[in-house]
Amino acid sequence: MSRLLSALLLLASTTSAYAQWLDLPTPGIPRLPDGKPNLQAPAPRAPDGRPELSGLWRPASVSGDLRDTSRLQQWVRDAMAAHEKNYYKQGPHMQCLPSGPGYIAGAGGGGGGYKRIVQGASTLAILNSDLTYRQVFLDGRKLEADPLPIWMGYSVGRWDGASLVVDSNGYNAKTWLHPEGLVHSEQLRVIERYSRPEFGRLIIDVTYVDPGAFDRPLHAVVEMRYAADDELLELVCNEAAENSSQHWTGNKLTDAAQAAVDVPAGVLSGYVGRYEGIWLSNPTQVDITLDEGRLFVTRNGSARSALVAQSETTFVCPTCQWGQPYVFTRGADGIATQVSEVQVSGAWIFKRTK
Image (cartoon, rainbow, N blue to C red; front, side):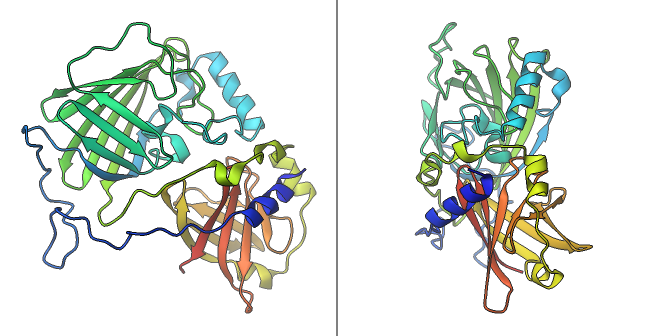
């Protein structure tokens, strides 16, 4: 079965998600005279005087050298190339499995999605929208030298001035550090430094050390924003993904071209615009433009990619990471009201906003 038919099946079986409590103001946070959250207010302190990291956080940016392949051992580069040819469908996030250390800076593409941090005196918990969690123990215990490998690893933390330093090990080798197939070994060790310079900003400085996979450590800086007046929504990946990855076969660069059809310019112009929604708990903006008779997609401000028509309403993005289809829903006037981005994890719906 082709990816196009798989896309249509997924689209037919996926319904829009509606949530409650998204309009309720977050209690107890600083606000400006107009009632808006004051994200530039001083960072709060916990009862013990330590910086308070608790709250709901969303990723704003990720920088660093996680995609510097010169630091990787050859077997890792070979594995990444093989995963690319296979549509990355062996990735844990595509199999609806925990992303482990990938949640820190790379799962779902940028910053790992929304996180709720719950800070206590002896334990800090990090809750993810896909129902996974981490426990960071602050009671002085040490990491074991030879732990049983698990998905989320083991984490201990200590305070270094105004920063929380988290040291983690014990990861299994089934996870990726980012969606482009960056694998690692069970020797992986992750060091994170959490700092909150003001109320609305959380900075996570991350170092990945793995002598079994990297010739040199990898580094990333994740900047998070306080998600005021918002909620952590449940994400059950395999509700839409059951048995879907088996249909993602072929060559993403050539299959779309071989199945391409001509679509009139008047039809294409009805798809131009901005669409917004949630993808893997991440706010996502999709811009569709028309240039010299071809549609292009830009996702969250990234470089634009050409779309290849497979029908009047279904297009494939061969140069996008997963070669994913985009399916437009049109109104009676021919103007698209929404576009669905179809991936192994399901059909993600983005509504027209512009």
